[in-house]
Each structure stands twice: as structure tokens, then as C-alpha cells.
Length: 141
Image (cartoon, rainbow, N blue to C red):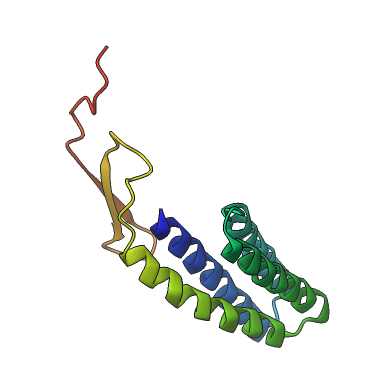
């Protein structure tokens, strides 16, 4: 479960990088779109919070601050707010990476195929390999 949170952080960082590149190129439409996507990633992190724990309230405040920083960066066209949000998220990211390594909870899904995907020949070519693709995975008809 912890690895999914780490992946959401990675997605946020990718959009922050996209915003930075668009800002440098002065491509304002791409800049705004990258910031909107970053806000959606933060929205997913917010929705994943479990408010039964006090830590969730603190994380909520941080995520909302970062989301608001991206909104401010959008209307001010100032990358500094994006950098501030990214810096704050990087500090949290390190903790989640460490926690994900120690996560011993059961997988979220069972009876699923193992899929490995990677770029092998070029930037636009994606090759997927499924292992045990002809097994029933527990379903019989």
C-alpha cells in the first residue's frame, strides 16, 4: 500500500518538472496544464489520508498548502511557488519511501497478472511481458 503513495509523489514530481520546463520555454498553456495535473496528484494524496490518525491532519494541511502554492504559481506565473511546494514534498517523500520499505501489509490485489513494462527500443515503444498469462488466476468457468 505504501508504494502507491510513493508513486503518487513521483507523479507529482514529474508534473513539477513539466511545469519547470514549460516555464523556461514560456509555454504558458503547458505550464498551466502541468500545474493542474500536479494539483490533481495532490488531490489523490489528500483523498488517501486516513483521518483516524493525527498525522493525517498534519499531512492534509501540508498538501493543501502545496496545492494552493501551485494555484498561486499559476496565476502569478512564478515558478518559485512550485519550487517551494516541491521542496516541501521532497522532505515528505523521503519519509514515505522509508515507510514503504518497511510496509509488510498484504497486497491490495490478489490473483493478478505480473506485468513488467519498460522502454526498450525507443522513447515511444513500450513492451509489456506477462508471466503465467495462460493460468486461470483462480477463476474457473
